[in-house]
Length: 88
Image (cartoon, rainbow, N blue to C red; front, side, top):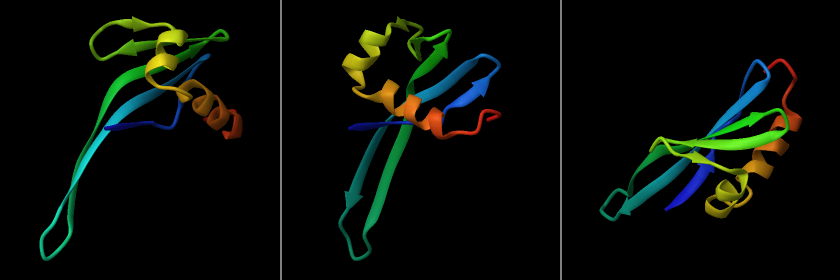
């Protein structure tokens, strides 16, 4: 299973981005068929120079816990934010 961070969304002074798990399977047959799913597992919350996470399980996560489970998710999101126009 792998994961991906969806594009960040600005809401006032905060920014939110969903971390989603990806799962897929390729089925052999005469015609190749791929099936998969994408499910959010954590919402990254960027606020006042800090980053926290809100899990779909209701648990809060620190930046260190996010980094442990999803290495580079915060850095990737910050890099993407730097490329976005301020109004988005």
